[in-house]
Image (cartoon, rainbow, N blue to C red; front, side):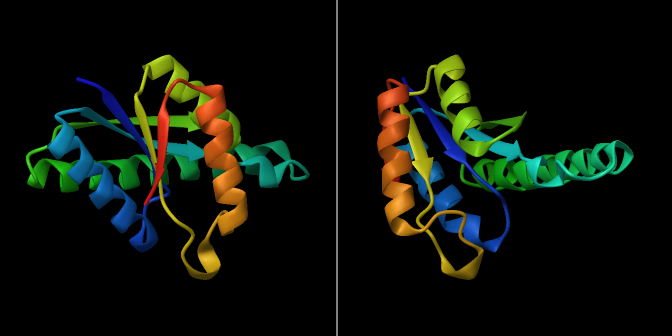
Length: 140
């Protein structure tokens, strides 16, 4: 039995990615772990008190999004774990994949204006993940 790591930001755009990860966990009989990376680096030039407040808000939002993803999985008979990390997505996703010993990483394909990556960047990131971990990367 392997482990699937599904990176998620939550929200409507992530639903398709989460559903694909749940389906893969069902068909493969693998464990499922949803990962949310809270990145407050955009606040580097702001007063420290504000940064702490925003980091707490990002954590709460992440926990909520992860709880929704776990609930979705449970409704389909899949017990999913959740993990939250802090920092840059690229760094934290590689570190989490290594630490958790995952066999598959599921990423969502860019959708509309809210996409974190464009298609070319996503393919480059997927290759970076495969090179930096022992996991297969599947873009859905």
